[in-house]
Length: 294
Image 1: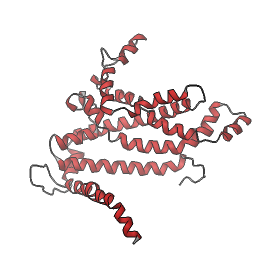
Image 2 (image 1 turned 30 degrees about the vertical axis):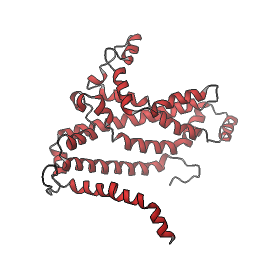
Image 3 (image 1 turned 135 degrees about the horizontal axis):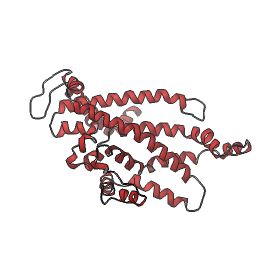
Image 4 (image 1 turned 180 degrees about the horizontal axis):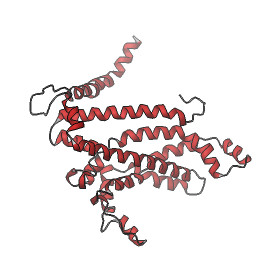
């Protein structure tokens, strides 16, 4: 009877899982082996979509490279930036609550509004960024209009919103026992020693969590490129044609759902393998207070 009551209580979630998650997930897996394009009959084509992805679609490799570039540079920079700001905001000085609010505020702003704001700020001729660079004698680049600077522009924009990660690190920093720092003071440790031998090891579980979740999110970058490029075309020279944008264009502009589904499943498997790899190597550098890195 108790089991029946439990299932009744969770039945809305089970129904949602079956019809809104598991069902569409399995359907997309099947569609990835067909030539389904919404308007015609669905025909099974086996691995043709996957062969096309690797051997016939040059934009697939372009979009994958653009995405990898963004992930490889944005994740280390945003993580390091969040840790640095959290350490600064962990100081016990007057007015610190105000600065914590200011640094966290960009993390809660609407995405599309932020993108339009940064489009104005990164304008080559009238943007605030190039104007400030001009004050110190530096000629700013064309940013979103120059293929060499489009991805660095988005990474720069991401650094502005590290407040979400900063909040996680700040919460962990405030839970570190002061006895550890007092013992380090007695041993003659300076600030650098205390950071690398106490602070950094104690926050590695949060760094680990943040890196994994941020990596998964970064591989799904879409809105920035779609909103900040003309007609969502991927920017000059396809420099902002990220993987999800290329997949979206195949699905909802060319209505090639079979091929788009195969791209989606490739990304899923790729992220899953990368996540498992991160979980394996995490045991070598993540420190847990209990002493068990499992």
